[in-house]
Length: 298
Image (cartoon, rainbow, N blue to C red):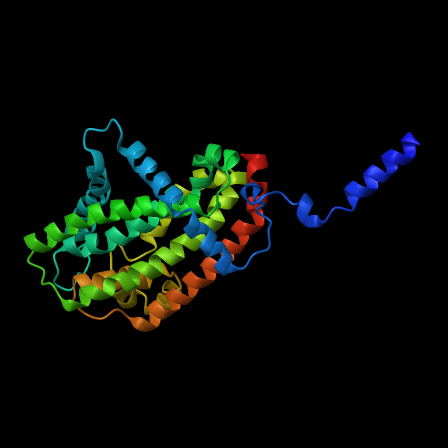
């Protein structure tokens, strides 16, 4: 009789509904098949945690430093000084009559944002590994919080551009209202790459070592120290290939609006927007595909 009773008990347990065996909401499984809108709502539900992680990262970044947030200005400003000496004084890059410091910094500022997002966002899941393993949260919060930190640094570094514009008497144009459009395209592009790299870094730590080198090469392959016009004049046959780099029309757009007071090349900006959306879709797809194993690897 005891054997029969045990068999009945096992049968009753196996007959429970799938909902009864499913973990509660707080023990969320990252492999749940939910739509994009549901994912966005879930991230928004945890927005306060995202602000907290961002604030913690900001405080930790400048803790026990003498200059504090000034370091956000020092790095792009130092590169601008070096570029002014090398490309402005020695190579004498054509700036269209603009002062080279303003010419270079107008593109250095958005490039520095792009570089910072990739550097901080790529290691964001590893950096918050203790939180990811202990509590439930949408893993997307990790790279998103890193982007918020980089935007704060971007706002601080933009003060140097304002000072340059005053010193070199650069006119202020109404076209400045178009800068948020270019900034949004850049953030979408960087976010898509960060989703991919942050998930990849959890499994392969080599990414963190290779990324600074790739970004350094990318800076010279983008119109930071020079303009797209320089490429068009020197090698016009390579211009179409050069503009395949989605950061090229974004950086050149910043420079055209700030320094030259002219419209960006919207056909190239539209191309960059398409590439950014494609990267966002592919990067987020890879992130959601791999995030189920984060806890096992971290």
